[in-house]
Length: 394
Ligand code: NDP
Ligand code: MG
Image 1 (spheres, rainbow, N blue to C red):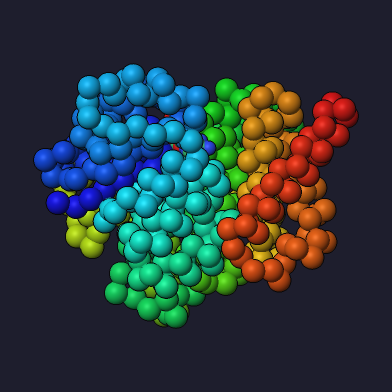
Image 2 (cartoon, helix red, strand yellow):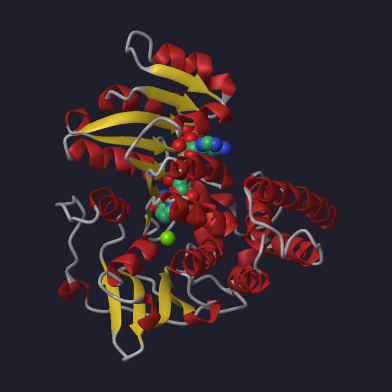
């Protein structure tokens, strides 16, 4: 039986992954090694019992007792804390879902690759902060990294049997997020609740807010460059409100392969789970005659400064991605806490990038876990200073 672990099992991607495992036979079909979560202990315990996991881990030490109690009598091992999380990636497995949110997902993924395990990668922050490290590790160990982000899964599928050298351009689409049709002046007043509702996709809160600000697409542009190894200039973003075309690959002979499907993450997760085969998946089917029309437009740079910042990150290279992501995560925490406004997230991230791009430790430095962690912490500290300045101004 295939040995499977899920990092971030209690989140939006994690729950969809568990759903697919259950539909494909659950504990009878898969040997579930480890499931990890954070504060959602009831869900983690229920998942571990249903899939008869060997081990359940919460990343928070103060949640240990509750998880232990919730799994009492089940025979399932319990552990807590960031070290326990990384140790869970040492447990032999054939396929691991990396679905922790944020840079916290990097270390367990790296550890899994160290053992040659196939890594289904939803955690885009791993590629943004440390793409060459992660993919270098995979190459050294002969391990596979399979994209789970819908756009990247779409490109991956469009490239089956193709030579990347024949690709002229990769276009990823964006719904435009919660505020696509808002007048620009109103964006400054956007609340956390409003930003946490996505028009098409049902996702975790952080990525939903990142979709409204396009920070998610900014991360994805960098993710595209890292994963497919193509030039920044050959990557494009199109606003496509219906979210039915996930990505387009343009080839040198003028042909364009588009990947389409309803916005349901179980497609991309299921593709990575069953790759290189395809299995029946419980996703709604596409009825183009009923849909009638698809709309596309170029993103407005004034509305989405995050995309411009992504270009700057790719131009800088090195650890600029780690600085960008660290500042973005800190600014997002601060927006969620009501400390800064919606538009100030981009202002904070830009100010951090400006400040750190002059630092010699950011560019031309080896990308290893210590350096990534150091820059991530530095960017967060720097963002905290900017946030304090912004709050004084407010
Ligand atoms: P969620 O917020 O729904 O879930 C995150 C998971 O990570 C939960 O299991 C959570 O535990 C756990 N977690 C949170 N913080 C930490 C931490 N510091 N250390 C360890 N575990 C932690 O996120 P999503 O499922 O939406 O997203 C997961 C990843 O997948 C992100 O990188 C996102 O960008 C990417 N992605 C998501 C998509 C989606 O449709 N949701 C689409 C494409 C990519 P708990 O909830 O128990 O506290
Ligand atoms: Mg995506």
